[in-house]
Image (cartoon, rainbow, N blue to C red):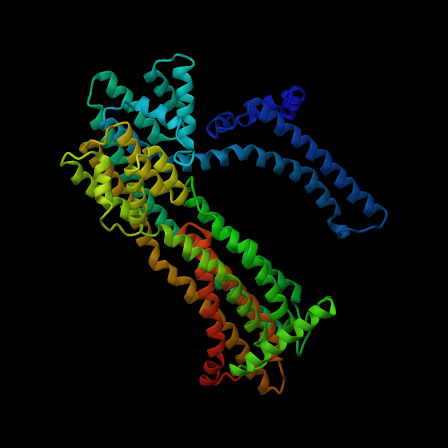
Length: 603
């Protein structure tokens, strides 16, 4: 018996209570496709709740006893409140998290399903134009690779088992599948197909129209998502810029006033705000963008490998060498490493002097160089990977349109592909030439597609070529079938262009905000220096710049990553923006003293 089985045997009474309290839990578990009996999961939730209750009571007892014996882990006046909160909040919060996990998984699954449904509809419509019924298409999807359809493949596998193993009538199995599937579009598509077939209607026309409606709906949803992403990016910029400028101003003024009075805010608070709180806000927005954006079954993670295995370690080493020595931090390193740090410190000092910057900018220059040098390999890797796929979908769409016209001459689909391989289709041409060569050698389309998939990690390109291969292998590649496929490919390309066109103008916002933040912080320091100078009080400009400039550079770098995620759907799409933003902040630092002198703010 499994662990969950033991829990269910001993705490089934708790599971029944939880299912009565949370009546949607059963439906959420089934819709999320969790392979667990609902009452067993509810029993597991109850078991965890009891364990956390025991732990909370134990911690509360320790806190109360320590207060009794004059051992204060926390202020005595808060002992009773914290003890009560531990007992009440911690177990309840843990239970609620476990209750809502299936609901979150359900939402994620529905988003993945809604992404796949238009392409699934295109598949069965294309196959139907070749005379293949949808339930045969269902069976073929059940055997298809998981990188084509993830969620639909699971449902197709269940349909296959119901028909082949349990002997159910295909239409009945399709109706059962539609009723239990967590997608309104899928439900309407399959139930409508069953009703059309039972009434003797034109199934092909119905499927084609439903596919067109699915893609139009997807275009509409894509526009809405683009608008939301735009609002999200604007909100992120507003929050980070306004919050950063407000708190930087407070911290700088507090530090300046500390020259004539006791400071009211410690440096620990600033470190928390600049190095933990602001990056955490960026992380929250990256997560929100990830929830809004489509989750394709296939993604290219090679840039992440370069970043985490090379760029990040190099960046950390360079920050230790170039930036930390100027922040007044004593590093407990061996003499050999300290010698290297001393050499790098001399290098940054010399560079700071050559740029004509006053004392204090060394830490900003150091961290900027560290981030720039460290991320360059990741930018190169990202550009290399993205260049492989940039324009390939457009090339496939043009190829399919030409394939339709050539197929009307009566040539076989294979001969058409070989003839079209001599034309230029951009990034797709090299793949088309290989496909044509393999067809000439007598290699099967299935094997050719498998080799194509190994080279191309773009899901839209994969799904389009999958539809082409299936339409030729099963449907015979008739002109009508290829015409439908070309139309759907044009819809896919239109959808992608709409999304990029909507988000492109918004990417300028992070650059403006980073420049404003850098210049305002430095000008504020210079302005306060001039004001305090009237009273013959030195504010230690160099020390203020050493403290407040590095986090500005770091957060500009993180802003680039966030902006890339929001605009390109991938965090590695922000590597280039992070590089350019860091360079932008560095250039702003170089020109800022000139601006201060121009406006007589006096560094």
